[in-house]
Length: 256
Ligand code: PGA
Image (cartoon, rainbow, N blue to C red):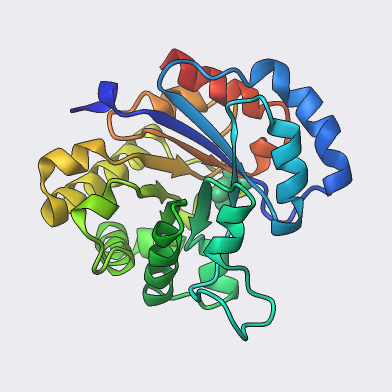
């Protein structure tokens, strides 16, 4: 199995943007271009309170709904938390975990990301597990070893069977929201390395089937070149997912 046999995934990450009342107009702008070609999937990962509105807007579309975080706990006295079962009950298909903004602002560790990943798998939701280095780490030449430690920490104790249901997103922190996209070569280098780490953990065959996404200032203009790389199977898109431009990225995947 190689890239031809892996589906592409174009996932939007709205972060803390948009209002439920704005969703119908947003979808009106995006919908005409959001037709998915064969082997292409797409999801919008949105703030918790917007999930029902987005789910309603996307009814009849192949674009799925995702969340941006989940509690590691099943239920109980965890004020402010949202469980994987609650997300599944709302029809959520994907959930981002370990985004660098949560690692930075909420001190999320690889251990916590690992617990969240297990909670999502238990609820039948596809985790999109993020990893990626800071500019200081890149300049210090530790990008690959750091990303490897995030991957191994996040996937600790995950069986091969479960690994088949996990999506990895490589997002260099210096490229997020900065307009400074990683070059296709830089993104490919790390995504290829991640696949190698997965091969070491789970064997070549399984690693060849895992979707590895790139994220960080991906847009309608640079998507085609990034998606053409042998180990980049899609994108996790922040800023550009808030605009009709998101459809151009889906279009690039359709043609890939
Ligand atoms: P960006 O965000 O596309 O705005 O750089 C990507 C992300 O953080 O997922």
